[in-house]
Length: 295
View (cartoon, rainbow, N blue to C red):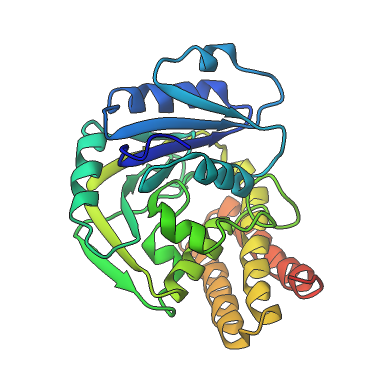
């Protein structure tokens, strides 16, 4: 473990995206201080020598696969009070380090903090290519019936290490890099955190941008996987003794499908219509796969 005098470890989990990772690390390098260290968990098959030569960056090479696994390795490797996760296609804003340290010092009684994550839309129909999380005003959210996505997403968030360890970390059966549920790792963790009674703080002072790189066509398969994983995460609740929670989460999955359908009709968008079908198919697949496995 690293020196516990470090307030926050910023972990970046990556696999086979060296160009994207370089942009992320360049932005973090400008924010490094005695209160912040940068840790990379690299699951790429080939070693990135440029990464290992970066000053001030600690690297864990992992031959395994899966974002949840990588996050658990980062959590195990840090002695900091807090761990922040920044995706390898996310750019922190200037002043991120100072703002983060300041917010964590006043986050009395909180176990979670997330900031404002912007993105953008394409000019061809305004199709969003990335997940964003706008935070205009400070907020506190707490309670088991708070929707897990309302406290933040995996792209950028901060959690108290003790709280994450008490939950057993991230479920390695969920998340990018694993099948059949290549997402919802963050939603499952958020839900378990909220169910434990933790307090989540949202602040507009900590800012980042989720960079666009996927094409609209790629979003069809991505939408199917996300929806399938959400339904699998909900099925996990049903199979572990929380059927009401499962129905609540499945209901929100259906709302997501209907919202995309409404958007497709309103914008007369074929790609959004394809995404609607993909989301609905994924939802049905996830229910079947999730209810058919032992959690």
